[in-house]
Length: 177
Image (cartoon, rainbow, N blue to C red):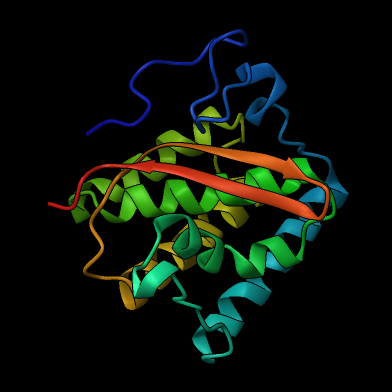
């Protein structure tokens, strides 16, 4: 399954499912030195914390049922803590959803699909920003596999709704196989 078989145009709907045009959403990932350094530092912190068992997940759900939206928010917890704006929260959740769907692919395709995704973000291959986002995706993939190996529902679409005290995540997923 090729998630991004064609190159997106600036006016195409964004691949992350936000409903926005690509140019108004994920195209605007900055490549300036400060943001790149911050992303690299966060990537290292996240990998270290996960490796040391400091990151835990909350599996609360309605009536004892696990809701995919709550699972995604739980997986995104560390990323969300580093955000300051609603737009950053949307992008953090998008990264988790991309990692989630990648985790459901054949293992032999994951590296290629990560590369395809990073290309759509207009990151330069081999750059620090590329490496940092790649590392974050790998940690998220591992967290999903470790904590939710039996959940195999693809996320087909999502919406992050701004609320007065934060956001609400709506997720449309495939049926349980």
